[in-house]
Length: 127
Image 1 (tube, one colour):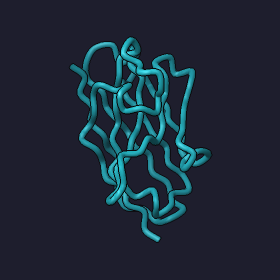
Image 2 (spheres, helix red, strand yellow):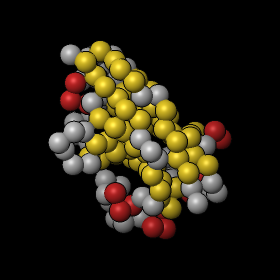
Image 3 (tube, helix red, strand yellow):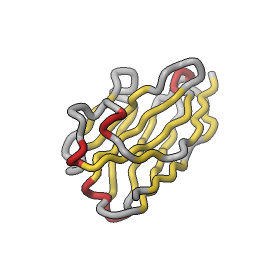
Image 4 (tube, one colour):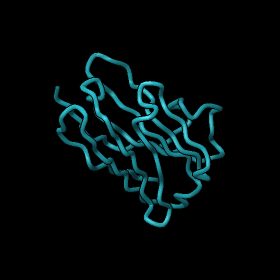
């Protein structure tokens, strides 16, 4: 089974940057589609970004497009989310997720694509 541990969250002022990491343990990291989701108080879980198992395709929520960048380093078994120009509305618990490519649901934006989830890391953006 795949295990995922997020890190890099914290408190940052609006306009600042954070880089989240997701360390993955388990077999065949390179065979997994990877994504980031976030959960803010009073809101539903929201898709943030995803990267295909090949690393060749990335997907972003409209709310973060142009500000966030998802990447993966298969040699380090690590997924990243570079977050720039942070806004208070980005405040949330960010979780990484992994799904085997053969379990792809048809949408990288859907939580159903992902079988494994990290515990989440808190990102707080002050105004």
